[in-house]
Image 1: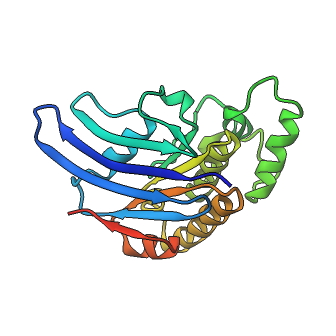
Image 2 (image 1 turned 45 degrees about the horizontal axis):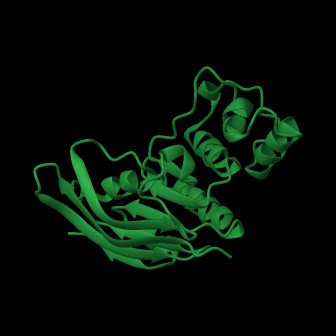
Image 3 (image 1 turned 90 degrees about the vertical axis):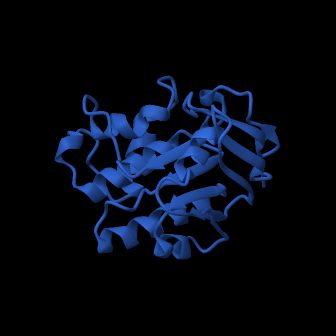
Length: 209
């Protein structure tokens, strides 16, 4: 089992030196830590720092590591971090199957079979050739999740991924996401303003103010 995701005195400031937030967290493999706080407090900015996509308007200090690898100086594509957003954006020019398999190398053995198995796992068997535009919101959310997981990340970041789903779908997607992450022993960092999401995650809750 890996060491998980660690944020050690991650301090994010505006470029002019004005502080935004400071956070330390340890997310063990297979567990979820939730970060809560009002809009504008900087929750999503924490995720951007972890993925290496922090906007130029910000800078940070502190250490970030994943399973013992220091993330600070790695380019985004080498960090092995997957992220799901509240907008489950699928590539409109690709089929559902091509979206799911996007993270797989084209030379991956049995690529078609892996995509078919992944779709079956999320209840979308036979959807490989469908246009993403024909999917419901819940179906798009499931495809986005499986696309992220098939890329074999070592950690999963969640940026309000359930906020635009209705109550019934929200509960099902929470269960699906946390269940799949636990099965793969991924450390999960959830950003949300909804206490019900954080409670469903079942782990530590960090409150930003």
